[in-house]
Image (cartoon, rainbow, N blue to C red; front, side):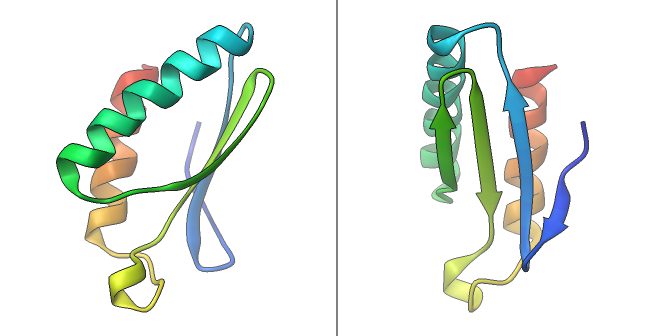
Length: 78
């Protein structure tokens, strides 16, 4: 899957087998985001997690911080 630039944010939707698997993914992302001090916007609907990344401190633009977090999230999902 590839991150897409939509409305000035990097976005991707991840699909899982069920809700517990999706929630476990969210938890893992939360720890990585906290360690990078860069927190995503996301939503969860049963087995789908949609993540949007932009740097609020930079005027809600996409920055290197967003690309770094996206790469770290991709490693979880791989």
